Length: 497
Image 1: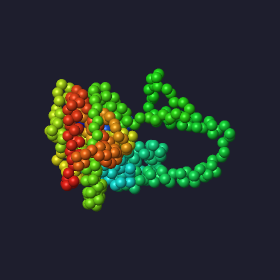
Image 2: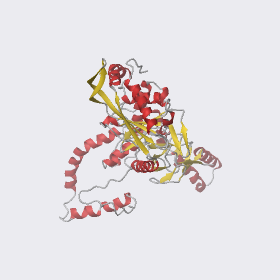
Image 3: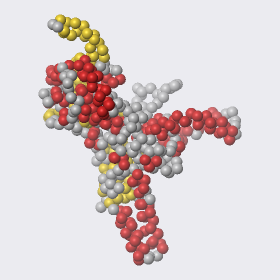
Image 4: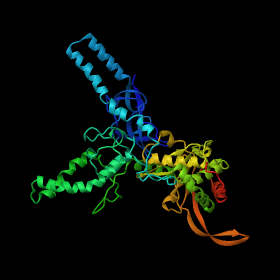
C-alpha cells in the first residue's frame, strides 16, 4: 500500500503552504529523508523530506499550488524499486516473448535512473546544516537579521544536466537568481554534487557586465541590421507570450488601487510576504494590542561585555551578543510573571512550563521567528551560540520544522539597525513580545555620593507589546521593571558559561 505524503505544518499557526518546486518526478526512486519538494509559508522556506524509501508513484499537487496543512501531495510505493527488480529477474528466468520482456526491463530502468541525483540531495543536507560559512550578509551573534552562506545543501541537487534549467539550489539562492534575471542554464554549481551556491550566483553577476559587453559586438556582427522600425516592433511582440505563460491570470485590482503609470514598477509579492501579510492582518484584527515602554541603563552590562568580549571571541570565534544578555534577564524574570509566558486559547489561558524564546530574524524580504527551546536552562554562552546558529540557518533556509513551533515569548532586536522605539506585533498565540532598542550614549541624572549628578550613560529603551485580553498594563509594567532591575544591577562577575 502506498504511503501518502501530506503537506506538513511548518509553524504553530501555519495553516497552508505553497509547493514552490518539486525536486523529484513520478517514477523517481528516493531514500528515506531525501528531499521531495520545497514549500514556502509565511514563516520559512523548507525542503520536505521523504518519510519512507521507495518510488514516487503519484504527484498530486503541482508546482506553485497552495494547499492546506494535511492535504495529500504525493504517494510513495515502499520497496517498489526492489519489486520491479525481482519482477525483471523472474521475467528473464521464464524467458517470455520480447513483447512481454520490454516493459519489465524498462520500468526498473526508469525507477533506478534518478537514484543517483536523489541520493546527492539527501542526508548530506542534514549533516552540513551546522557548517554555514559567512560570505552571505548573515547575522553575527547579536543581529538576528543577517544572512548565511547558502553554499551548502539547501535545495541540493546535481547541476550536471548541461543547462536544462533543472539545477537545484536553496530558496534564498533561487530568489537571488530571480532578482537578477539570471538564466539558470548558464550557472555551474561548485557545491556538493554540482549544486549552485550563493557564491556561484554572485560570481556570475560580477562577471556578467564584462561578458555582456564582449558578447554584444559579436551578436551585432552576426545578425544583419533590421529595418528602422524593427527594433520598436520586436520588443512589443516577443516578450508578451512569455510573460503571459509565466504569470498566473491577474485578478482585477480594486478600484481604489491606482494602476502603474510612467516610471512606476509593479513588484509581485513573494509567497513569504503574502503569508506575512495574511498573518499580520489576522493578528491585528483579532488581538487587541497594548504597549508599554521603559528606559534601561545598560552601562553595567556594556562595561561587563567590554571586559569579557575579547577573551570570549578568542575562545568561541564570535562576539558576545546583547541579545543573549537580555534573553537571560527575560527568562529569569518570567518565572516571577508566568502569565507573560503563556498562550491564549479562546476561552482559556495556557501557562507554559517551558521557556521557549522566539528570536525574530530578518531574512530576505521577510521575517521569521525561530525558537530557542528551554532557553532558561542555557548559559549566556549557550544562548549566544543558539542565536548565531538559528540566525545563520534561518537566512540559509535550513531551519528544522521543530525550530519554528512551540514559542512561549518572543524577543525582538530592532536596535541593531538603530531603532530607538518600536511597537512590534504579538506573535500569537503568544501573549507578549519584547523589543530591545538601540543602546545609545545619553546624559542621565544619577545619584553619586548622595547627590544627583549628570553623567554619560549607555541607555536603551525596551518596548513590550501585549495581548490585552490576557494582560493588563500593570502586569506588564511590573515585569519590565524586574527585567530592568536585572540589567541595571548586572554583576561584573557574572559568568558567561
